[in-house]
Picture 1: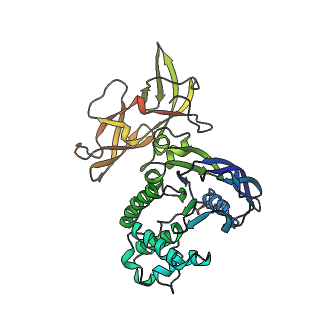
Picture 2: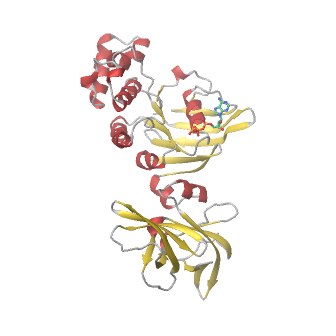
Picture 3: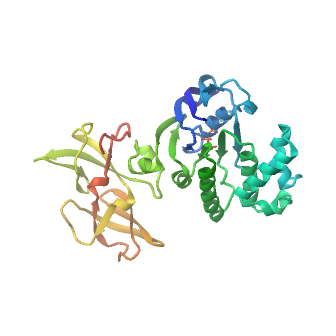
Length: 360
Ligand code: ATP
């Protein structure tokens, strides 16, 4: 069992707190992604787990064992970095078995394990080559092979795909997913790429300024962001935000914006009448040629074709919104349209804290 527990971790560099009171439980066999903007503390958290960084406070447990003061080699982990860090003067085979040799694993066992992981990563024909004779993607596979051949309880990856071109990233992403399904080792994966996080994670821990601001499944994070920050960080393009005032009359609820009133399906107990932010994803806004009750008048500013869909930039009153519509919807820049926000998909936020309001 390799459940990981972070208990109230603190790490400061001078006056900068890189991690602030971070607490998180990662389940045995889970693929957990640490996601957040540059400088939010992802790498520091991963390095602390690996034993490469000393904490100021807090405890780390792996499989129930307190590893906080153990050196990296005694934590049962293996790590794959952004830079592949394969030894250039060694053939692929020797790169893969390097760690096993250091642990004095017998030659026959080394060969058996190297062949098994090479098969898994589909690099068997490359075992006799030097790293310089490999593509970036192949080199990265060697780095992954070298980590998993150690049969670690925990696999750590820090932006392992960021040096690869877009197509190769897509391919390797699927490979890593398959690999995890086969190995089931507890994996902690650091990235600032939200598409990668949504695709790979069983759960995503979104970080900001050294803290975890939401930890949930990709669907939950996407559909029900805990704050304006999360909604604005996840999604391409990100969630739209409109300012307005929540009002109830005759049993119905609406948010009045400068462009018009947006009807809501209902509000949670935490939402009181007053200023709110309406959060809505670009694909949950419908573009109409004629006004309907509760639709907002808007003008199309730009239409960008994006294959099966097109991305519209529209202006509704003073607010600019992004809307995703089918590619065959006839639209002209400069034309007048009406926007219908799907009430079931609206997420209300508190304008002062940015926190999502309950039940929406
Ligand atoms: P990135 O995506 O850019 O790698 P990150 O989320 O991994 O960012 P960290 O590398 O964990 O962020 O850094 C968190 C904070 O700690 C940043 O403000 C960074 O400048 C600071 N920091 C990290 N390492 C050190 C160090 N060795 N000395 C001083 N400050 C550091």
